[in-house]
Length: 93
Image (cartoon, rainbow, N blue to C red; front, side):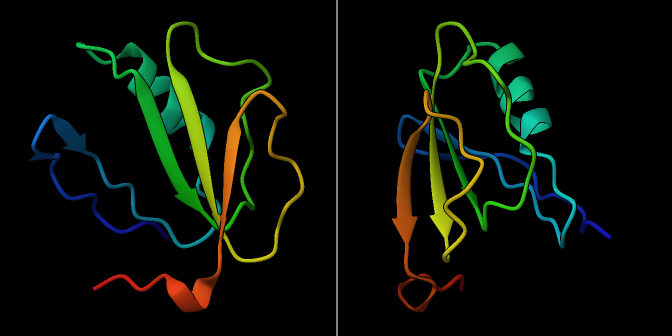
């Protein structure tokens, strides 16, 4: 069951949009939402354990970076920039 998502917040020129999930989170939906938002972001950064469906094609005019927390390195599309994050180095507060 997903938790209620907090409202977007600003960080300088960035807008932080959190999507909180507990399994079954579909990043395709979040990437599509970002692509259709106005103004459209230049880059969408997705932090995930990687166990999610991914879009087959890149959204036009927007880069996507996947921050994969943990060892799941499968399924991320080749067109997407990927950063692997050790879960011991990643703590939410």
